Image 1: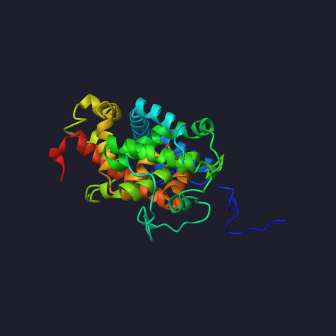
Image 2: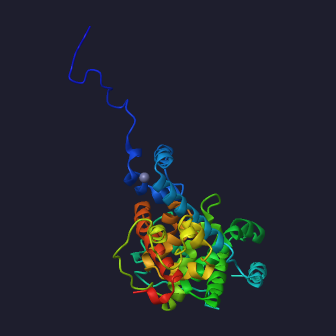
Image 3: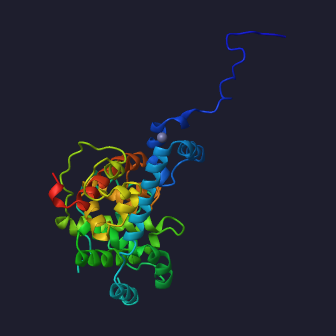
Length: 97
Length: 232
Ligand SMILES: [Zn+2]
């Protein structure tokens, strides 16, 4: 039985993939969460799809990611002085409240 | 070394927010009591195995708070001993890092606040996404990425010139409300949930502070990389 409507031939709502990944703005909005691994899997895929075909964004995102990782690596060399570590270790064994 | 016994002040401020002493937060008693008359004994080996993996990150937090190594060491020691004394309140399996950072922030506000440094006054003009990247790829840019071959690989050019001191100075130059969030996410790789727990702010606030704070950080890095004379 045929029920022609104006939407005949169109996919029903919910069957279509979001076109969000075509937009630079949508990807850039998710930059921080992308860098910090805070995106849901679906959002992460949206960003990755965009980066796949948008060279400017790929270049920008790569820069941001490299920057964060590099800053983190450099700063991790800043650590507790050895003599303080030893002092703390011995204080725990002598400090009685 | 700073006095270990903390005297709470009424209406104490934490991070600009009133300390509501919410249940589950578990720090108010650390300030309000000297501890029970006979606290449960803490096994130092167990304490160390839980806490020591976070000590370097905690020390860096102390450096950012106090701005100098001597005070940072004192603050770390105070924090560590206080955590040890109140270790019986710590729930194994919960976030040890966030717990330690909260103790440090609380101890700092009580004992060291007079030494607290405000970030520089910054202007929010010209805050853009990809601030550093855009500077480094601009045509005819002078300074860090001026070389044409460097603009094809901008990150390489800038990263080679970033050292610990520049990074620390740029972080410390951030307005105080952004400094912690940016540092914890960018330097210490804390999740947004951990940061929210540590700073007692909603996760949404973590997101918005990061969004603006990282742009400010990039601008500060750019300014330090190009020397003080370009500031203003
Ligand atoms: Zn794009």
